[in-house]
Amino acid sequence: MAISDIKAYAHLTPEDVEALGRELDALRSEIEQSRGPDDSAYIRRVIAAQRTLEAAGRVTLFASLFPPAWFLGTGLLGLSKIIENMEIGHNVIHGQWDWMNDPEIHSSTWEWDLAATSASWKHSHNVVHHTWTNIVGKDRDVGYGLLRVTRDYKWKPKNLAQPAIYAVLALLFEYGIAFHDIDVSAVKKGKKTKERAAEQMREMWGKIRKQVAKDYVAFPLLTGPAALSTLTANFSANVIRNLWSNAVIFCGHFPDGAEKFTLEEYERETPAEWYLRQMLGSANFHGGKVMSFMTGHLNYQIEHHLFPDLPSNRYPEIGVRVREICTRYGIPYTTGPFLVQYGQTLRTMLKLSLPDAVLVRTSDDAPETASEKKWELRAVA
Image (cartoon, rainbow, N blue to C red; front, side, top):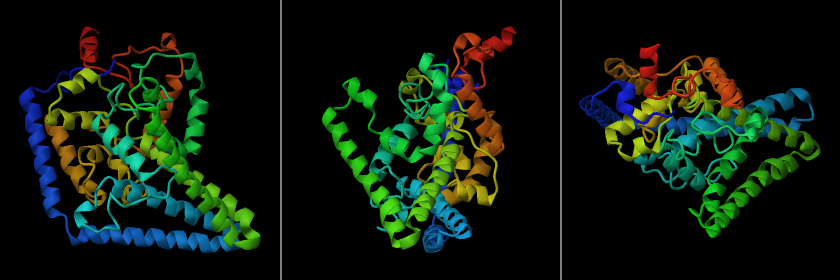
């Protein structure tokens, strides 16, 4: 099922893995030392451009009773929300720009335009997901508690509903993110107190109320006679953002080649093996500068997982180095066109909605789930 011996899976000796770790440590140090005015100017330009787009969208929607203005305003607002969430919010909250010591662009102060609070995202994403990436039973992003994306989870009749569940999750993705860190299962198992969960619920609903008041009450009312059409435009912009961010994030860990791991593997993991797990458990997709910008540079998901707190605008140059390292060590560098990667993700969710009995490939050598045993199986075949 999931990988339980990462060195055997990658065909690397312990010495190879430690050498890999030293190379990646050196790359991190090099980028950290080269951060400077060009990088800080970049994020400030992005924030200024995003706010300009949002203002243009809001102003255009004063004429939202007229279809051309509705479509233009919705598009501008949707674009601004994507940029705010992906290239700004996600990356600022990761601490990528903390080195600037700018209190306005800092992970400790930034609150993004999303139903989830930045504090809940920091824990569920920065801590849980990035620490235990793709570890079955530990990384709650492996299926988000709703979807079966690896055969390491036993099939249940409820999985038949996966296509419909995923469609709803994609449309309302910001609310799924908001609820994710509450972790009701942890409360049931006694790993989290009811009091702490209730506190998180209050924080979540407080943030949701602010977002609803802003997008569905205050801004629509400002447009007077166009209030209802502005409300529908704001809702549509949020859906556009939700669908895009969902697709980008799901392409990071669920295409073929993004492997899963056992808890036992993690418990004996060295820092260098942590690097290796990030490389094997993540997937990139192709794209030029525009695609990189619109995805928050998460088309470089491998690089992001290796160095989540380095500036996103540096991932393209880091990617060239990481790919060369992968080639030298014989490590898969999983990437492909966006539509192919997303198609594989959707296929996996559809496929694993069905019982294992109807699946053809073995649980150790299937596109969506593999382990070090697959090499033995292929040798026998």
